[in-house]
Length: 341
Image (cartoon, rainbow, N blue to C red; front, top):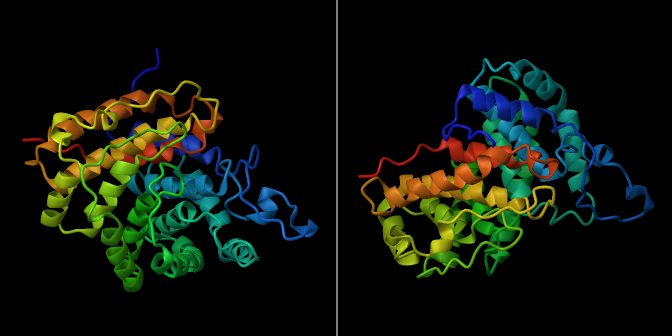
């Protein structure tokens, strides 16, 4: 029987996550590319195309793998693996390699590359790098500014959000972008503050028909999470109570039942472990935004615990999950459980 890891971040868990992730941020194969071929010269290997983010099976997982590594060594600077992480960061997060990533994005056919998931994680990585006494954030800044500009260009043209539970989810991406823009990009913040209510403010009585068979995000909870960022606390509580009016009674039940993962070697089915972890993150963060006196606090605490218990023991069961799941486990474990009253 697999031992259940702790339900809060601690030194041993951080060491486990960091060791796992350092093992794949530089692992080029197996790898999958989101790549437009404009001619025969564009047929190249992942590391030739992406000087930094060629590991972790795919570009976006490598980006948030680096976010995870930097976050863990900031929170636990004495991790045994920390010197190796810092040494690799000093080798990889440098201006010439960032210039190579930008050169890729300057090619024809890359306007939608990694939109919006990879864009958002690149902003989150830059935000985390800026919290370190190291040159990493300065090196990454041109890449972050490029993706911020792409967000600013697309948001006014997005008539509708994407409510899917995969990489295209609008709410998840804008949650990360909102946090990055707080002290850096007032125009992007204003655009997000206008767009999110325009899409979601009138939503009522969400049925939460989820999960889909390959989802790693909850469309319902991702929407609620970004609304909790954009709205002030009283307005968010009013909106949430109308959006999920029976949630204190455990309805819709689909939001409280962890997903069953039948085959962790199948990359799409393995997404469901990510759903369990991201739901735990959302439940904790939403409950914190609502406050401990809100009727959902106790339910949220139990839901987060149940979802974590379902997937935390399986982060390294297969490379299809190993290359990314620890990031979502970290998101969840970082948020304190609400003290329900």
